[in-house]
Image (cartoon, rainbow, N blue to C red; front, top):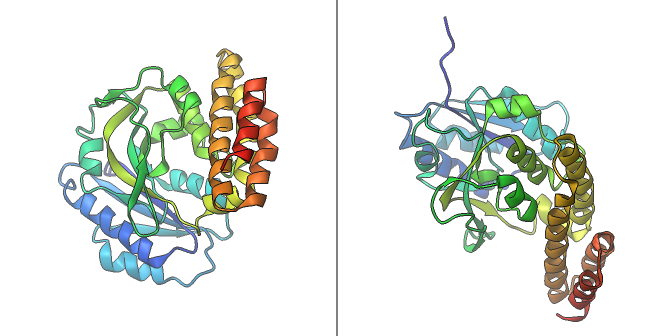
Length: 311
């Protein structure tokens, strides 16, 4: 007997979750699936990445998630890339949607991302993303890549210049993961950016011009911890080396890497200014240290110095 086809695998790694935010995610997920479940088939997979906390999150899942789900348990902590790769390995859907445990999705997320299960020639789809704070208030949004939904023209250059993609906004075809492999376990901060660049090198990318997902920024998440120690900037330098090798292996002009270097440098300058405004001197100095490697001309140096003397 043939296995029933699954359209979308929703995958959520779990590690010491904030239970309030986790409950909000599960409720938003259930609502989004509920309105489209007659047209699309789903599986929901949770990967407990050897979380040391109690298992109260399981009660939240059983109480608020009505559709079938599976919880997998890692014997040891695999880290972000390892947890994401575990999710992808277990996923059986044609599309894979990876969510952080504190993300949110819009009621119409799946309805608008997958209009017809057979209609898309893209290997990856993403929408605009809201950045929300600890209270769920929208602080900002990712860039609007194009005003009308559709295929992105030259997505590789778009992803080298910018990072308009946040994890909760992305659907990637399972076959893309099978062909490209999983996320790079050497990277702890830029693993998603590097992967989207790899996808854009080989597949069509579609953009939905509406904010249908929310990424939460808080003082307790892993991204904030990495920034405070400059680990994000250090990781970005490693990603640049990997991107350069990837471009060369795919016979793409390596000089395009400069677009990525400028993106990283400008983002570091932004972080330095914000950190100095908050009085986070040590964190700003760590960002400055790793930014020096990206200096290519006098203008770059002036901008870097300006970020230190102008609050």
